[in-house]
Image (cartoon, rainbow, N blue to C red; front, top):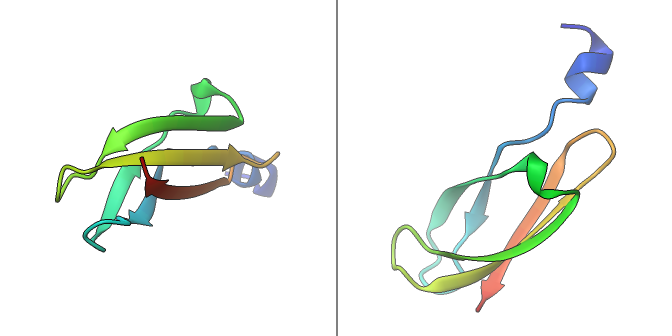
Length: 69
């Protein structure tokens, strides 16, 4: 894989900390949803709802954070 191909690979998962229970959880990401995304997803540990925010940069690296919904 060339450096350019590696730089342009889109992230498909990220680790986040649940704002309710504090557990670190891996969430799946969908690059096809656009470079800026916001949606609700439940914590896999405590089942509380999060507001998930995803921002992809021009190289496909995702910045992901969650907050209480």
